[in-house]
Amino acid sequence: MRHLPSRGFKALVALALLAGSVVGTQAVAADGSTNGLGQSWPNAQDVSSSARWHVYVFTRNGVRYVQVNDLHGNVRGAIATAGGSFMVLPIGVDANRVATPDDPQPAPASTDGDIVYKDDAVQVLAAPQADGTVMMRAALSTCKDPVECSSRVD
Image 1 (cartoon, rainbow, N blue to C red):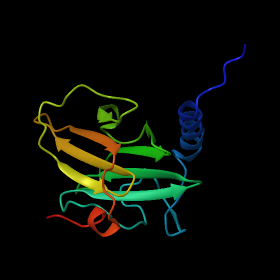
Image 2: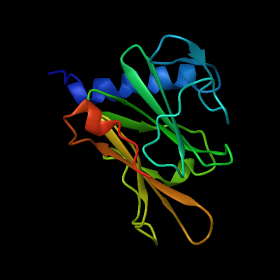
Image 3: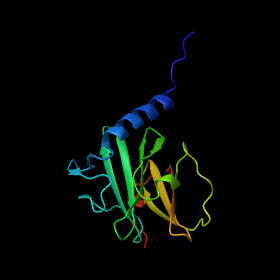
């Protein structure tokens, strides 16, 4: 008897293939214009919910890419998400310190941080560490109100 991959596995494979084709190239932003995923200052709207970070969201073929930059434009990390599955993208100086439900990481030394992005599907927390690195955690969002989800908290 042949085993067929689960729906979650299929979504993760699709994310991997799509992410691989986008990293190092350009992604299409939610507004339809072309912008640079992985760039310090992409031609995209900053949608961060914290004044201490820059967050850029790109969407293509149903996959949402969320990139987190610091205030100096340094790309810290990025994730791709679709259908409740997550993938850490190999971009940013802290790419190896990004946790998702599909790729948990050890607990950070400092759990203080900011929710830098939240929408109806995903939320991203960034927690600066004493050594200058940043731990990030992406998780499913519990937010159901689009106005509340996108509000900036300073």
